Length: 125
Image (cartoon, rainbow, N blue to C red; front, side, top):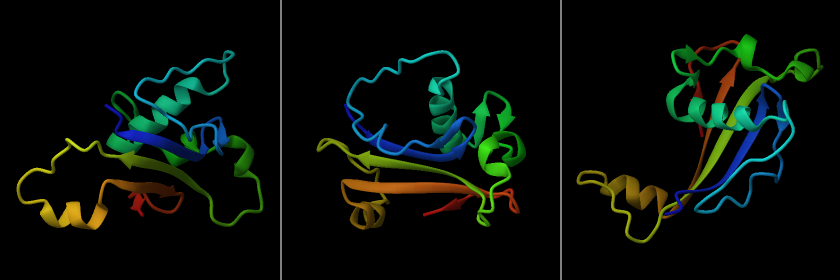
Protein backbone atom coordinates (compact mmCIF):
# COMPACT_ATOMS: atom_id res chain seq x y z
CA UNK A 1 0.00 0.00 0.00
CA UNK A 2 1.62 3.20 -1.20
CA UNK A 3 0.75 6.36 0.75
CA UNK A 4 3.84 8.50 0.13
CA UNK A 5 5.03 8.83 -3.46
CA UNK A 6 7.81 11.42 -3.05
CA UNK A 7 9.73 13.57 -0.59
CA UNK A 8 11.58 16.85 -0.94
CA UNK A 9 13.94 17.88 1.84
CA UNK A 10 15.80 21.18 1.92
CA UNK A 11 18.22 22.58 4.49
CA UNK A 12 17.96 19.68 6.94
CA UNK A 13 21.18 18.47 8.55
CA UNK A 14 23.40 16.96 5.81
CA UNK A 15 20.72 17.38 3.13
CA UNK A 16 21.16 20.66 1.27
CA UNK A 17 18.47 19.82 -1.30
CA UNK A 18 17.21 16.33 -2.04
CA UNK A 19 16.25 17.42 -5.56
CA UNK A 20 14.75 14.56 -7.53
CA UNK A 21 16.51 11.82 -5.56
CA UNK A 22 13.36 10.94 -3.60
CA UNK A 23 10.77 11.38 -6.37
CA UNK A 24 9.93 7.76 -7.09
CA UNK A 25 9.09 6.11 -3.81
CA UNK A 26 7.17 2.88 -4.14
CA UNK A 27 5.46 0.39 -1.84
CA UNK A 28 8.83 -0.74 -0.51
CA UNK A 29 11.95 1.43 -0.47
CA UNK A 30 15.43 0.92 0.84
CA UNK A 31 18.19 3.48 1.25
CA UNK A 32 21.74 2.47 0.46
CA UNK A 33 24.88 4.54 0.55
CA UNK A 34 28.20 5.25 2.18
CA UNK A 35 28.49 6.14 5.84
CA UNK A 36 27.54 9.79 6.51
CA UNK A 37 25.74 10.11 3.17
CA UNK A 38 22.39 11.16 4.74
CA UNK A 39 20.36 7.94 4.88
CA UNK A 40 19.38 8.38 8.54
CA UNK A 41 18.70 12.07 7.99
CA UNK A 42 16.00 11.19 5.44
CA UNK A 43 14.28 9.14 8.14
CA UNK A 44 14.83 11.90 10.73
CA UNK A 45 13.27 14.41 8.31
CA UNK A 46 10.20 12.20 7.92
CA UNK A 47 9.95 11.84 11.68
CA UNK A 48 10.23 15.64 12.06
CA UNK A 49 7.50 16.12 9.46
CA UNK A 50 5.03 13.88 11.28
CA UNK A 51 5.98 14.46 14.93
CA UNK A 52 8.28 17.55 15.23
CA UNK A 53 10.88 15.20 16.73
CA UNK A 54 14.09 14.22 14.91
CA UNK A 55 14.78 11.33 17.29
CA UNK A 56 12.73 9.89 20.17
CA UNK A 57 12.43 12.62 22.80
CA UNK A 58 14.43 15.19 20.79
CA UNK A 59 12.40 18.02 19.26
CA UNK A 60 13.56 19.62 16.03
CA UNK A 61 15.95 22.46 16.84
CA UNK A 62 16.67 24.91 14.04
CA UNK A 63 20.17 25.71 15.31
CA UNK A 64 21.19 22.05 15.46
CA UNK A 65 19.22 20.71 12.49
CA UNK A 66 19.76 23.41 9.85
CA UNK A 67 22.26 22.49 7.11
CA UNK A 68 25.69 23.79 8.22
CA UNK A 69 26.78 24.78 4.70
CA UNK A 70 23.82 27.15 4.42
CA UNK A 71 24.34 28.88 7.79
CA UNK A 72 26.81 31.41 6.44
CA UNK A 73 25.16 31.94 3.07
CA UNK A 74 23.77 35.33 2.08
CA UNK A 75 20.33 33.75 1.62
CA UNK A 76 17.93 35.78 3.78
CA UNK A 77 15.16 33.20 4.18
CA UNK A 78 16.88 30.44 6.11
CA UNK A 79 14.48 27.55 6.59
CA UNK A 80 14.18 23.80 6.88
CA UNK A 81 11.57 22.55 4.44
CA UNK A 82 10.12 19.04 4.17
CA UNK A 83 7.46 18.25 1.57
CA UNK A 84 5.58 14.98 1.42
CA UNK A 85 3.56 13.99 -1.66
CA UNK A 86 0.72 11.72 -0.60
CA UNK A 87 -1.03 9.33 -3.00
CA UNK A 88 -4.04 7.76 -1.34
CA UNK A 89 -5.08 4.31 -2.63
CA UNK A 90 -8.63 3.82 -3.88
CA UNK A 91 -9.65 1.82 -0.82
CA UNK A 92 -8.55 4.60 1.58
CA UNK A 93 -11.54 6.21 3.30
CA UNK A 94 -11.52 9.40 5.34
CA UNK A 95 -13.23 8.91 8.66
CA UNK A 96 -16.70 10.28 9.28
CA UNK A 97 -16.80 14.05 9.62
CA UNK A 98 -13.84 14.67 7.30
CA UNK A 99 -15.76 14.83 4.02
CA UNK A 100 -14.73 18.48 3.53
CA UNK A 101 -11.07 17.50 3.87
CA UNK A 102 -11.53 14.74 1.29
CA UNK A 103 -13.10 17.19 -1.16
CA UNK A 104 -10.35 19.76 -0.56
CA UNK A 105 -7.38 17.39 -0.86
CA UNK A 106 -8.52 14.74 -3.29
CA UNK A 107 -6.44 11.57 -3.75
CA UNK A 108 -3.06 13.23 -4.38
CA UNK A 109 -1.73 16.21 -2.50
CA UNK A 110 1.50 17.70 -1.19
CA UNK A 111 1.96 19.08 2.30
CA UNK A 112 5.04 21.16 3.06
CA UNK A 113 6.20 21.88 6.58
CA UNK A 114 8.74 24.68 7.15
CA UNK A 115 10.69 25.75 10.16
CA UNK A 116 12.29 29.20 10.15
CA UNK A 117 14.92 30.44 12.54
CA UNK A 118 12.79 33.18 14.09
CA UNK A 119 9.87 30.91 15.06
CA UNK A 120 9.50 27.70 17.04
CA UNK A 121 6.17 26.95 15.34
CA UNK A 122 6.35 25.34 11.88
CA UNK A 123 4.40 26.70 8.94
CA UNK A 124 2.27 24.38 6.76
CA UNK A 125 1.62 24.80 3.02
